[in-house]
Length: 332
Ligand SMILES: [Zn+2]
Image (tube, rainbow, N blue to C red):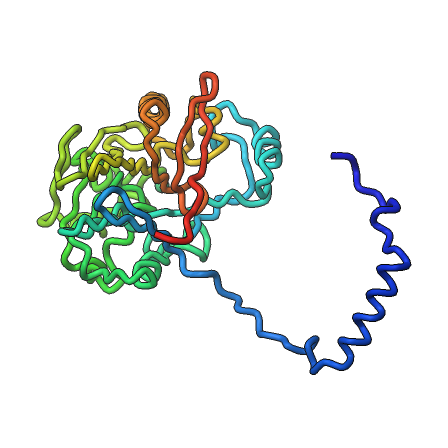
């Protein structure tokens, strides 16, 4: 499209001006239309989104975004600050703050309510907008007391620090917790409390996981540990990072957690490693394997950090991929 200029087409014609004047006269006779003001709402619509997976009801609830700040070198391998700025701008994304959403999936199987990941809780290391998961659940008509199972993709703060309340009580008092043992062992390891890079993660995670040790069930690769829910090991981002395949009546959805952290920067360059990966090379291998599966089998996925609500397909493009958000439906 050419550049818009104040050409003739954009100049109101004499006839339009006269019509406008006539409308003005009519309007003057009507009651105070122009003064029908409403206060600004200053709040967002409730952040839940519902859809069906066969006989299962799925609801994605938001814990709110994490603000990562302006692009910097070293966040992803082989990506300079300048190139990151360009890629964001090319995709019409803000260049002053990379926000990562937190999209937590709830599956109601009819027998059980299963929540995948818990958000970051009350920690505010990535800004003031997170910690909304409980409010989002309630807005969706889901009571935290009714959650029977919490399934963790991995034990990073933004996925498991919503387990315990600040007063030491449980946010989900009736839930069993399903996760890979490798992540429990790694992220609660006392020996890492002296590691300057890990100590804050470890100390915080111990508070959320250790009090729940007696209600934990460890998932194994390939195991269908709840009816219709199968674990698939996808290590690298963390040692026990796991994705979950949900199947009902021939329909499949994959909850892929942190298999990728950005819908363009990583999906379109899937060999980039992320600064928070425990083993970046292994994370890339897992990502390529999971993305290949999603693309070839045309399986929809919920990705934890993608733009709200994180529901979409991954398609193959050359030796990389492209993200196709699922059109949101206004009816169930
Ligand atoms: Zn995460």
